[in-house]
Image 1: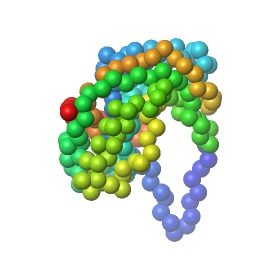
Image 2: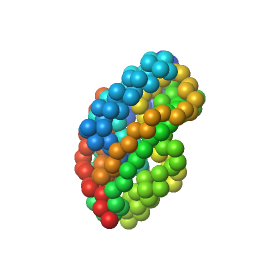
Image 3: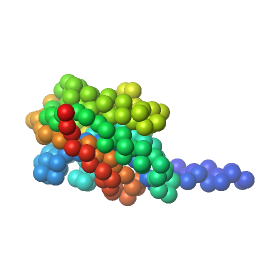
Length: 195
């Protein structure tokens, strides 16, 4: 690990401690199945990275930023209003591929992907983005969306391959507070999907 350079007269940069984002989270009953699949894939592919905790599994929709020493109250309030205004029906999601995302860093995200970008998930992404814009959060709306669920980080680069599908019904949107470096997600709000 490289050390952070320190220059006289300049303050030490602070490590971010908190992250806020909207996500889809697998139901508790599915989290167990996903964790079992992670262990099988680790053994099959020779991966040594530690899996994310079951309580941290998610599909990110829109990020609201990283912060130091807590989350801005006004941002959380605006996010709550945006999430509460989303109107899309529940849908099924299916992950049929596993692969590493290529990154220049030493470790790479090993993820599950859909065979085709799920139209319903993309619709939820767009609807949430519209609601965020209406609450003054347009600068946080991600125009590009690559649906995936990160399972672990590993030094190995795994080519895309087909797996036995993992499916579940997406019935709610979640606002997540991630405590960075502490392997903990706090769900600040849940909104049922509806037409």
